[in-house]
Amino acid sequence: MHFGLMNICIPVLARHFGDPFLRRALAVTSEEQPLADLFRDSRLNNVDENLKLMLILMWISAPHTPHDERDARTASFEFLLSCIDLRQITPRFLDPTLNDNRFNLPLEYREILLDAWKAAHSSFTCPYSSSSSPTCSADSPE
Image (cartoon, rainbow, N blue to C red; front, side, top):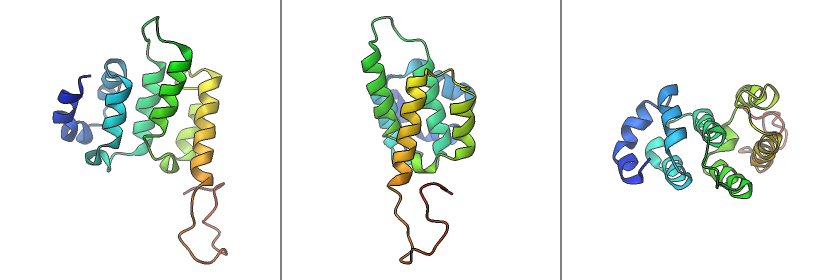
C-alpha cells in the first residue's frame, strides 16, 4: 500500500484494525517500510499489539515475489517485530501461534518470534522499588 494513502487513512485503519479483511488486505498489499511507519504512528497507540503482530505474521506468510531473498525476508521480519511492543503480546496469543503454527510459519520464523518475545520480557523493568512483588517477572508477563 502506498504510504501517502496509508497516512491519510490511518485514523480509519486504527478504528477498523480488528477487521480480519483489512489486515489481510494490508498483509498482501503493503511493503515493509510503510507497515513499519504504520506501526510507529501514534494514532495506532490504542490498537492491540496482538492485532499488529497478527498482521506481521500474515505479511510474512503472504506470497512474495520470487526474487525475494530469504535473508532479506528474515531481516524484514525481525525489523517489523521491533516496531511493535512485544511485551504486550499475551502468552494466550503466542502459544497457538507457535505451537499450533496457525500462520504456517517456518520454524526459523517461529524461533525468531519466540526469541524476540523473550528478549522483550527479559528487559522488563519492575515498576516497584521492592523486589518482593511476585507480579514483576519476565517469566510471567501480565
